[in-house]
Image (cartoon, rainbow, N blue to C red; front, side):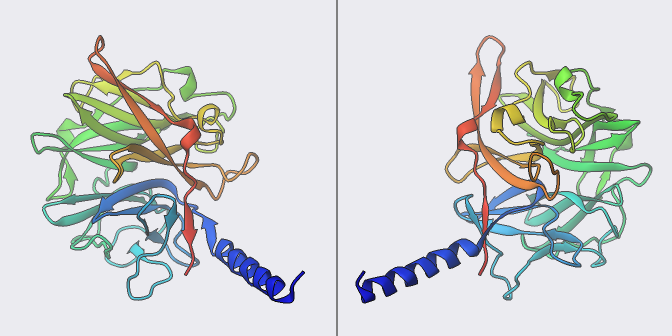
Amino acid sequence: MNRKYRFTLVAMTMVITQIFAQQQEIFLADPTIHIENGKYYLTGTGGTGAGAVGFSVLESVDLKYWSTPAVSGDTIHQLLTRGDQTFGDHGFWAPQLLKEGGIYYLTYTANEQTVLAESSTLLGPYRQRAVAPIDGTEKNIDSYIFKDDDGKYYLYHVRFNNGNYLWVAEFDLEKGRIKQETLRLCFAQTEPWEATPAYKSASIMEGPTVIKLKEKYYLFYSANHFENIDYAVGYAVADSPYGPWKKQKDSPIIHRSIVGENGSGHGDLFTGLDGQLYYVYHVHFSNDRVSPRRTRIVPVVRQWDEEAGQYHFSVKRDAVIKPLQIKH
C-alpha cells in the first residue's frame, strides 16, 4: 500500500473514531420536548451530572443529534437546581415545560410533591416566588398542565391510594394552585394490559399527556410499574377535560411488542418542526437491567374514525429514533 495513502487512511479512521467517541445515547427518563425558534429542547428525569440535582436540557434541530445549549460555555446546562429558590431536596422527576404570556413555567416532582417554577427565559434558571409545592395536603407526582380553548388550565397528575392513580383539577396558573373543589379521579385500573404478571405491583397509572382535537379530549398515560417489562402507553377519550374517559381498545399503542424494547413509556406528545406528531418516551437500559433508562422518540399516526367521531392513534414502529448526544 502506498505510504501516503496509508497515512491518509489512518488519519481518516482516527477522525471517524473520534466522531463516534463524541456521540453517546441519551439517558433521560420521563422525557418531554419543547419547541421554540426552530429548535427542540429535551429534558427529563436524570442526566444532570455528578452531584447535581435538578433538570438538565439538550437542544437539537433534527431530533437525532443533541447537544448542550451554548450558554456561558456550560458542559451541562441546568434548567433548575436544588436549593436555587426551588422546592425539594430529593426525587426530582418528570419535568414539563409550558410557555404562557411570555413566561416559561416548569412543573416537576420533588419529595413526591408537584411543584411549579417559572422563568423569563426558556433556559432558566427556573425559580419559585414562594418555595412550596402546588398542593402539600398529600403526595402527588407526574404533572401535566393542559390549557383548554376557553382559557382554563387543568392540572393532570398522579395521587397515591395503594397505587398510582390519575387525577385532574382546574388549575390557577397565576397563583400556582389547584381548585380543590374541582379535583376528580380520571379512572381506575380496568384493562389486562395495565397490570401484567411480569412484575407484581399495586395499580399504577401515570405520566399523563392531554391533547384536544375536534372537541374531543385525548388522555395518554402509562400503566404497570416502571420496572415491568410491560410498562406501556395507552389512551382514553372524553368530551370534557374531567371525563368520563373511555379507554381505547387499540391500547397500548407503545409497548415492547410494538417498539421492540422493554419498559417503553412515560413520555410526552409533541408536533415536530416537520408537522409530524411524535411521542418521546423512555425504555429500559437492557433486557435484564432497568436503569439508566434510555430516551426514544417515535412518530405517531392519527386516523379519523368517522363512525366514532374521533381519532385513533398508532406509532410507526419501524421509525423509532434513538437520539444521540454530541460531546463538544
